[in-house]
Amino acid sequence: MAKTEKKETGRKLVAQNKKARHDYHILTTYECGMVLTGTEVKSLRQGRASLVDGFVQIDGGEAWLHNVHVPEYSQGTWTNHSARRKRKLLMHRVEIDKLESKAQESGHTIVPLALYFKDGRAKVEIALAKGKKEYDKRQTLREKQDTRESNRAIAAARRRQRATAARG
Image (cartoon, rainbow, N blue to C red; front, side, top):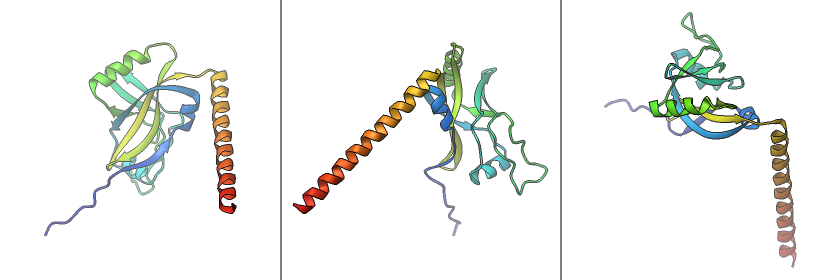
C-alpha cells in the first residue's frame, strides 16, 4: 500500500505590504511564482518575511524582486541563503512586456503586495502602482475614518432597534 501524502491546499499568508496600499494607487495586480532555494522556502514556512522596502525591476526581459527580506533559516548550514538577495519572478512573457511598458511611464512603479503559499507553492502578488501625493493619502485616511464612523452609527442604530423590538 502506497503512502498517502497530505497535500497543502488553500492560501496561507506569510507577509503583507500594507504600506504600499497607503503610499500608492494600485492599478493592476499580478500573481507570480518565485525562484527560491530550499532554506528560503523553509524560512517562509515559518512565517518570517518582510516586504517593506521591496520593489520589482524588469531587467533583460526578466522580472526581479529586490529588497525583500527573508531571514536566514535557523537550522540552515553553509548552504543558507542571503537575506536580501534578488529573486527571479516567474511570469508569462506577455505580462512582463506589458508591465515593462507601463512601468516606463512617469510616476509608475511595481511593488510587492503580499507573499503567500497557494496550494503549497510560494507566490508573490505584485502590483503596478502610481505614487500618491500627500493630500491623496490624507483624503484616503479621511474616507476610511468616515466609513468606519458611519458603520458604527448604523450598527448602534440597529442594536437600539432590536432592543426596542424585543421589549415591545
